[in-house]
Length: 364
Ligand code: GDP
Figure (tube, helix red, strand yellow):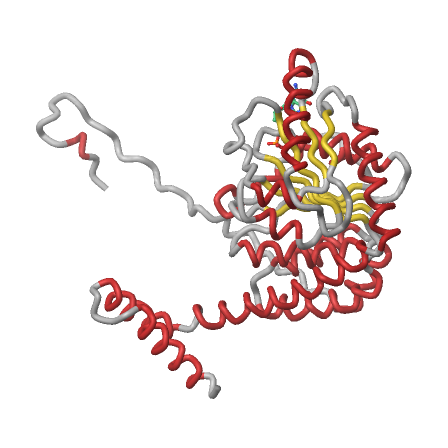
């Protein structure tokens, strides 16, 4: 192609033609063949043996959107279910910067001191944007990521919060079957994801820092009400005073809340993840919680309640998906929306018409 610089207007400037370029793709490179999918029994056996590679593959299947992967994953989960449930599931939340990764690193090592295994999972519905980087960056949990008994998995990316959370819920089953007796589920404490995490853990830990505005920390009543423990991080150096003050404020705020369903009184502690101060105290609280709810039967009752919640949640999700993914419904919704916006039809009449069409389509 002629260079524009060779135009007559640029006197004295000539650009030589370049050499022919080789093809971009190496012609000798073979197409990579996709690894065949392992069978259900290969996956289940591998998981039960605690084979991390197989576990990772199974989790990838759980996260996959391909229908054949979905069916395979469901079968694996069903087979793993009898071996699951024997773990402590702990949800950890806090706004970005509260020190979740620093804390999980030290909490994790503390838990693993007594042996056993730890899986760290995450729910970050925004990970579509950040490409699952919430835990993708290994440097975030430097020590833990090198520990042979720790399995760290970033948030499933893409999809609705419900979908992302369901995949994490299913991953818990696989991890437990693989012998992980401690499960941490991390979430960014800024919104809806707390409810989803709360619905899959036994203990919900809220990490706060002193001095940040309440709105900033997502201290909506709801999140605080869900917490079984509130821990104020960064209680080190000059920050010990403000952290202790925040502790007193949270304690008095908790007094205004109604008693919890478990009968447990949520505690407020201070600690420093970075300087590793107060870590045993935090875990002592968590140990006492487990002893308390196992004793009074709440532990089992909550797990049953969660299992029921997930059944309905999955039904809701699948119904919604089936409805909104339907191309005819999508077309009709576009028209109806225009009518509703232009006041030609009421919202209710439009909704009724679309639903009617859907039910007829499904022979309902
Ligand atoms: P995350 O976004 O909640 O995962 O927070 P990080 O663990 O990435 O921590 C955010 C920042 O706070 C980092 O610069 C940490 O070094 C710092 N940090 C975390 N824990 C502590 C702590 O206990 N004390 C102090 N002084 N800084 C901390």
